[in-house]
Amino acid sequence: MERKFWEERWENNQIGFHRSAVNPVLEKYFPKLNPESKTVFVPFCGKSLDMVWLLDKGFHVTGCEISRIAVVSFFKENSIPHTIETTGEFEIFSGKNIEIFCGDFFNLKNLFRSPVSVFDRASLVALPPPMRNSYASRMADLLPADSSTLLITMEYPDGEMNGPPFSVKEEEVKTLYSGNFNISRIEVIDVFSENPQFKERGITSINEKVYHLVRR
Image 1 (cartoon, rainbow, N blue to C red):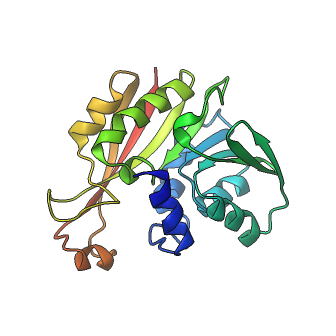
Image 2 (spheres, rainbow, N blue to C red):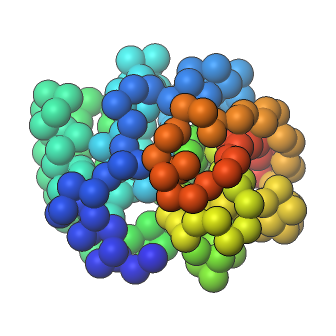
Image 3 (cartoon, helix red, strand yellow):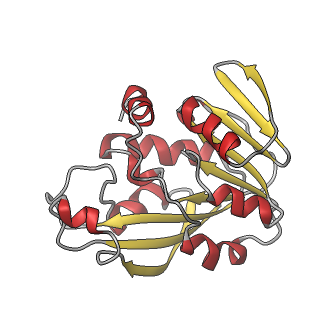
């Protein structure tokens, strides 16, 4: 998925991946993962309402998003006053307790000096197989030891749909992350009945898998 692909999705308002409510997995599990960390990193954040939930819970939020349309929409739709500054290739939108780096995730460097929490419901599943190893490696580089990640993937039968979202098997999660993270699967959720759009695309079954990753 090249930068142009996602920019065009936002330009054409083809954003079926955007949820109009807070992710229930976030509400259920996130407060339990790393209670000492008050900074949360949300990669590929879009204009997610999950960030508003995190702000309301008292967290400091750092996001990264490639589409400027998405970032501008987030601050406008949630009436969050903000400033914009340019650092290198990134535009940094900053409001109270939140900053979103508008640019290419793979070019982020040296964001965090102490352990943080991460919410990834939209990043790994947005990437085709050739890009996933680079993504996991970049996350390992960005995160200090003891950083805690809540990762949500999707699994559906091979060949039934061309992503995104892509199916990411549990074996691949272990291959991608086991070199730098401790991994535990904490829930499997059948989401087929509540997502009729996937049935329309030819899917016969689909599960979300929820993982807890801890950077060693």
